[in-house]
Length: 296
Image (cartoon, rainbow, N blue to C red; front, side, top):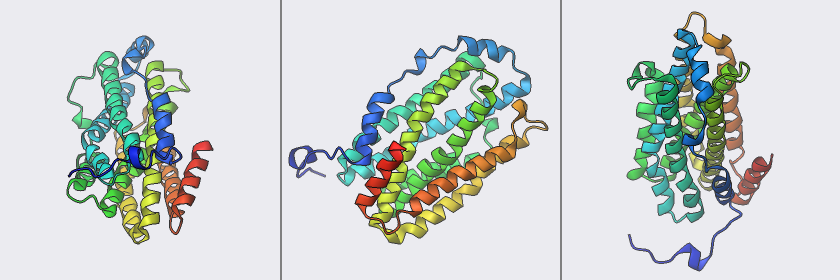
């Protein structure tokens, strides 16, 4: 398809849009190098872990690294769908997603190679619920945008990626790592990397909330589609947590399943309530709410 005009030479860039504000943050905060993080103390700590403590860490690491790789592999159709609509401000911000997801993959694999000496076959840690989400639902939803970039397909893709994979599962995984490691002052390099990852992912989730809010404001008839996608994927996300705890008679580091199920449900409910407010809202109102949440 040929171009007939360019935003930068006809209307300019709207720097007040939420994606452009997120782009400014990404340029400032998203430039960190996994190779620079010191893992010396992590190697010492790892040597002192019990076999079950190592197993739990490897379970979490294997789910994170495969999840980050999955998004890196599957993200391009969303960027393309937004680009085809001429939403240059959103596309500019989305260019940082791919760099950041690749960087996250790099970080986790580096830790697994240099500290955990994990080997390469870790698929034993991927249970049925995990496979349903990352092997099937995520690529299906995002790759569907190649042939059908409609609002309905964009909603399905963003709910799967931003709301469930990032907003429920990844954030619950961060909570598990910090609960295990922070209170025991263990694996400082891994904690530092995860803190930087979490900062990146919080921007991704903020964009997802904005994108879905914009789509619902523009296409209110799609609310049932969004609601159905959220509720369809939630059981698998909660199932991933249950599968993890089912491996252990006594969970290492004193973790309790109900704490993380409650945390995951809290993240889900918080985002769902934000999206519900987009029904009947104007785009100006959505931009205002996005800015208020950025500043909060």
